[in-house]
Length: 184
Ligand code: 5GP
Image (cartoon, rainbow, N blue to C red; front, side, top):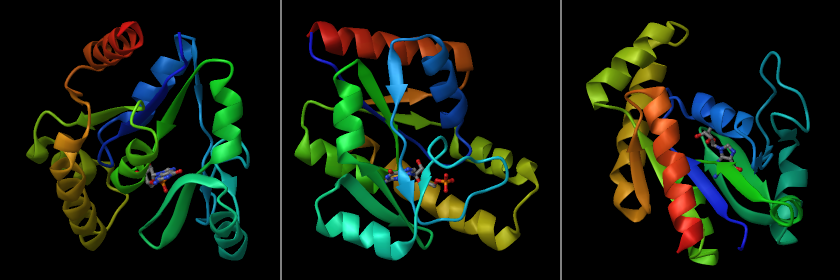
């Protein structure tokens, strides 16, 4: 059975990170580590959370065809290192947690990749989740809401959409989709 490239996307605050953690804990998957030009946040480690790099190095990587996909998001570049993912794919299924523009590039280059959109139970629910984080200004929240609408508008281009209403159910649903795709 061929190993799968699994792409998970979804708007900020939808719970992607927790879902990915659960999938990794259950074993059988590895996670791609992306490159980014954004500065590390507190607690993030180079080579674990991201490979942190400067713009010039990143742009060199683009020129050399080193990325499976890349995109600019809120002023920073993010990309999936091609060689890193190819290496991981030799040993099992690989999860990419990336935003929609990059995800659709992956689908164009690798139609066999499995694209799953994680959506909130309702948009208003997600807006209130974002507001409850309390760490962002009204302006930032507005930006994120606009981005959320954009990301969700692309869900028809994904293979599946999973609603994260209940974490256990969403994780099970994703595992079932992966199993079904591997059987087909
Ligand atoms: P953050 O800066 O909050 O870690 O991530 C911002 C956004 O960039 C998230 O939607 C995340 O999924 C996305 N992202 C992370 N890595 C990549 C990548 O390699 N490629 C693309 N296209 N998006 C990424």
